[in-house]
Image (cartoon, rainbow, N blue to C red; front, top):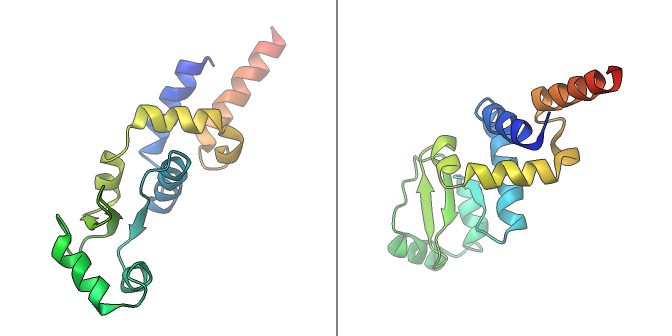
Length: 132
C-alpha cells in the first residue's frame, strides 16, 4: 500500500471505531497540536474543570457560547469557556480528518491495534511485495 491508500484506509476505518477509540485518537491529535481537548460531559469533569468552585462553574455557564448538560461531550472554546457537543460525530466534525489521518499515519505504531483493518492490509501488502 502506498501512503495515499493508507491515509484513505485510516479515514475509512475511523468512521467505524468505537466512541472511546475515536475520542482517544482525536484527543491525542489535539494534545500533540496544543488544541483544546474534548471531554465526556459529566458532573465529575465539570467539577474538576471548575476546581470544585460554584463561582467558577456559574461563570463558565454565563460565558459559554453553547452548553447543554444533556450533550455528551464538551470542550473549551478559544477564550477558555465551555462549549458542549451533542455526540462523537459532532466532536469528529471539529477535527480536520485529513490532518488526523496524517497524524495517525506518522505515529502508526501507536495506533496499529486501533486501526486493525489498516494494519492487516498493510501487512498483506508487505507480504505480497516480498513474494514478488
